[in-house]
Structure formats: structure tokens, C-alpha cells
Amino acid sequence: MQLIIVGTLDGQIGAASQIAIKRGAKVQQADTLEDGLDLLRRSGADLVMIDVVLEVADFMAAIEAERINVPVVACGVSNDTQAAVRAVRAGAKEYVPLPPDPELIAAVLEAVTEDQHALIFKDPKMAETVKMATQIAPSEASVLITGPSGTGKEVLAHYLHSKSKRKDRRFVAVNCAAIPENLLESELFGHEKGAFTGAVARRIGKFEEADGGTILLDEISEMDVRLQSKLLRVIQEREVDRIGSNKPVPVNVRIIATSNRNMEQTVKEGGFREDLYFRLNVVNLRLPPLAERPGDVMPLARHFATKYADANDVPQKPISEDAQKKLATYHWPGNVRELENTMHRAVLLAAGDEIDAAAILLTSEDGATSAAAGNVGEDGAQALVGRTVADVERELIIDTLQHCLGNRTHAANILGISIRTLRNKLKQYGNEGFNIPSPGDASQAGA
Image 1 (cartoon, one colour):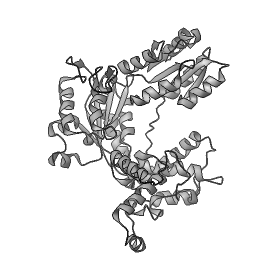
Image 2 (tube, helix red, strand yellow):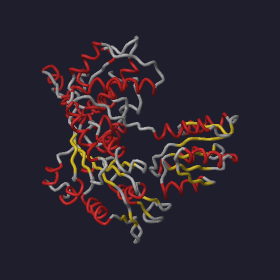
Image 3 (cartoon, helix red, strand yellow):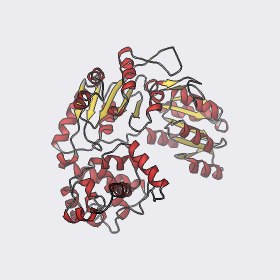
Image 4 (cartoon, helix red, strand yellow):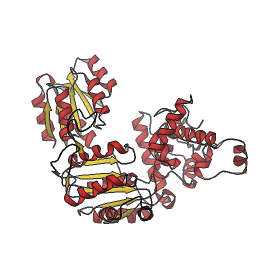
């Protein structure tokens, strides 16, 4: 685990560092915000601990602007309650009082390094896939994980890393579909200061961050063909060229890639390089849709019910028999991700001692979103007559986003469109004056 401490911690740096080192962390320290940002750009980190006497809000804004995704924990003297509140409001995950308590520091490190990607399964069809994953995990082979959106491809990638010889090194994930094409090259390979407008300092790319470990190229089939050729060179030469530099940097990474497309068809149509496909597809793991592994529905539902009860600080409740029947007979077009959203919403809506059937709001039950589930009846078709395609599309998109509690990624997967397309549509609707659900907005769910 890579830990960066920013600030002097009121003279407690040595104590905090020693506690972290004893727990297996590698520690770097910077006195100022700018030095801390520079460390992040150069080496990356799994966790940042920052002194509350510094401008935590400015630090959070800076890492967000540079798309650096890292949890931040604030630290300060125990009686500085206002500074602690400001830090948490600015986006810090936790507040740790000083002088540091070994058990508290250990708990924070454990919470950050804890595997949040539990592989929950019971169905025999899924068991076959996991068995194969376990068998090939210790190898150095590149792996291509395929399957419909929402089936858990990233979870399986984390599982492969956890069972590999690189498990004690970093796992770095890059969503190739979510990052604009003009920024993805910099995200992957890094850049030098002044390489382009906005490049205020040297920044290492994700391949360098993952050196010695594993890199996940999520939805790699969305990558521009021009960039695919550069990726192929990185794989062949085992080195990256930062934008604006003529000095290659050696890297040692294992590549796991995912795609929800038929890759052979995409190659045939010219959307993906054949030579790169063969480099990545040394081993192919296919994740079946949730409808093909019904034995996984209830174990996953119980897991998500527990997870979101804890996350929302509400009592854990059992799932009633009627609710179980409703879950078991649904066809889950959005796969595991839709089930997760459904159980999150159910935890928030359940009124009694159980999660009953009334709290299980399914996509196909909402007339506006039934088309996404493929169940438009005669009455539903009649209701669409006389309306423009643009109106129906807008209503479907906004209602699906409400169904997903404002989660853009989940909604895009249920709708079968890219996250980029969804964001463009939502921006258009917002400019036209329509109300767009915010992330975590449960107030309109099922409306």
C-alpha cells in the first residue's frame, strides 16, 4: 500500500509513519500541498493523510481537477473540531485525531485496503468461470473478460489480481469509455510539464502507477484505433512514452481488459486491431448474464441488502418470501448492476421489519422504463403513438436515471448506451430546462 502524508501533523509524522509502516504501507511525506500533489503525480498513492491546518478543500479540488482518484483522510489535534468538520465537508473520508492511536490508524488502513469487490456466487455456471479464473490467476498471461454490461467484469478482474503473484502490488483500473479520447492517452501513459495546454506539471500515467502490479483496461473496445496502436507498442516493448518526452520508461505490468462487445465481430468490422486483440486475448473469461445464472440472484441480493444497510446506517432486514419470489422471477436486463441498484433502493424504501415485495421496484414495472426491459405491451405501444422519438427517448433516459438513484454509469448500462452518450444527452436535457436527478437522489425513485 502506498501512503502519502501531507503536512507536518503537529510533529507527529514519525509516529504516524511508523504505525503505517508496521502495517505494511510504504510512506512518503510532503510538507506542502503543492509538494503533496507533485508526489501524487509522480508516484500515485492508495491513501493520502493530510494535516487539517492545510487547505484541505483546495487539495481536494486540485486532485479532482487533475482526475486523481485517491481517498483522503484528514489528521489534526483532537480538539480542533471545526477544522475536522471542514475537512470532511471538503471530501475527506475520515478524521483521525493526533497524537495517532495505533489501532485507529490500523483500522483506517484496513478500511482502505479492504477488498470491496467481493466475488459472490453460487450458481454452477458462474462457478465454472471462477474455477478457470482461479486456475490462470497465478500466471502472467493477459486476460480478456467479456460479457454483457453489469455482469461484474471489474469484480472478476480484482479477483484475478488478488489470486496472482502480484497481489501485494498495485491494482490500477482505467475506464476507457468514461475518459474523453483526447485525455485517455495522457491518463494511460502520462505527460511532461507543458506537453499540452493544462499540463501544469509532469504526471505519470496509469501504466507507471501499476508498475509491478496489474492494470485493468475496462471497456477497452471503446478505445480509439489510433491509441490502440500505441497500446500495442507498450505491450510489445514493455515501456511507455509520456506525452512530450522522448525518453521511454520501462514498465512491468499484467494487463486485464474487459469488453461488453462481441470482440471478434468488432475486429472484423475494423473497430479493433486484430494484433492487439490476440495480444490481450491470451485467456478469455466470459461472464454470463444474470438471467443465465439464477442461483446467484438471492446470494447477491442478501449481500447488497447488508452492504447498503451498513452504508446508510439503517438496520439490516431480511428479505421476505414474497420479495424473494419477485427477485427470482425477474429477467434482470441490467444484470448484477441492476440487482445492486434494486437492493439499494429497497433498503431505503423498506418500511417494516422485512424488505417486502413493495420495496422491490423493478425496471419493467415502471411504464416509462418498460421498453428498456423489452416488455412493451399493447397498451404501452398505444401510449407512445403520437409522440416524437426524441420525447420518448428523453423520458426513458430520465426515468431510468431516477430508477438508478442518479447513478450515471448504472443507468447507461441498463439503457445500453455509453456513459459518454448519456452525459451528452443529460447536458442537452438540462440546457432545455428538464430536471435531471442528481447522484444518490432516491426521492424520485419509482416515481
